[in-house]
Amino acid sequence: MFNFFKKKQADPKSKHVAKERLQLVLIHDRASIPPNVIEAIRKDIILAISKHIDIEPGDVSVSIEAHPGASRNSRSIVADVPLRKKGEAVR
Image: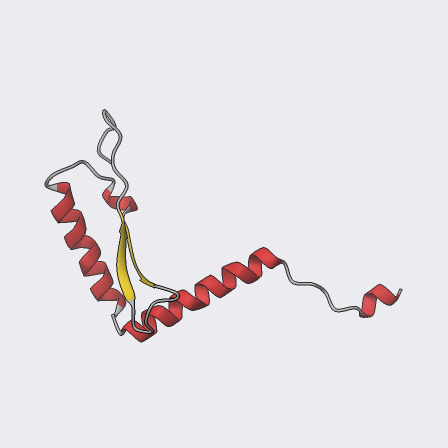
């Protein structure tokens, strides 16, 4: 019966995910780069790389990441560009 009054413990995994999401939102806000600019960069990356190698254009993601431990203003634009497997059909 006394367990009813005890504070429930939060799932550590969901706490970690929520923290990462909040950090991502803060990074984007501090970088002052609107979402439409990130999307334009994504499209440019797809065009440039696809001229030379086969990629999965629908799976390309672009994000802004902070570098913990580095200077406060240290951020990078990171692109994840999956390569198409040999013989795989174009979507």
